[in-house]
Length: 293
Image 1 (cartoon, rainbow, N blue to C red):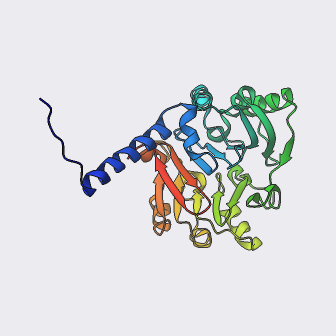
Image 2: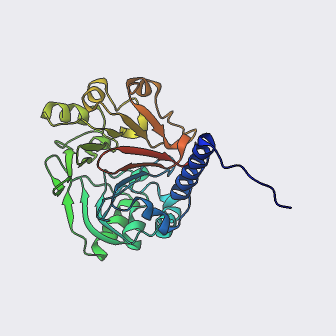
């Protein structure tokens, strides 16, 4: 005997569609299958990776070129390289090292060693750490071209894509964080601002420079520290979405309550709560996907 099933009504079809979308999103974010990433081929795809108390962003341009900004902590380098390899990444056409702090550059030597590398951008600031030395060695071994990242340097300038550095605007900072290479990416009319660990001094210089700081998506500076994201800076950027890359229960108290208050007009996403955060742009709209609900 066969049981007759009624055709689902509009509500039933809607539920099925929602479940299908959720399954696709989960596959895309979580699984390391390279084929899944083809779902967003031809679109701008910006990943804010969950690397704990550190920073790492991966930008895939509509034509397939890849940009990596920072590479998290040294202790997560093997896991990072493994995940990127399984995702199908083979080459980073542009590498941005924002500043020489371990929670941003810890995995960068391993990245340079493990993938094909194009142009490298970093500020004119060095440290005498083993981790930084390893990066220099890896760059030398691959004969990588290194360009100083500073205000006014344009990394990409094409028909509908532009990537330019807004900071650092000067030198001689007491706080290394203020040397952070701040990158602005524009795709059609959509703007992303990656603030590294830029602090109040750097933010003030950017404001005084008269540059267009407005952005739809802001990678919040210094993991949401109270020493970054000043009221004037946030007002000028005026982001719709604010992404905070931060470790769960970190000892720094990031993100600071004051910072979250200053970001109250934006939709805030945190990697300690949402895991890896993915912002996809088709040129007409932004879609935000998260690893965790």
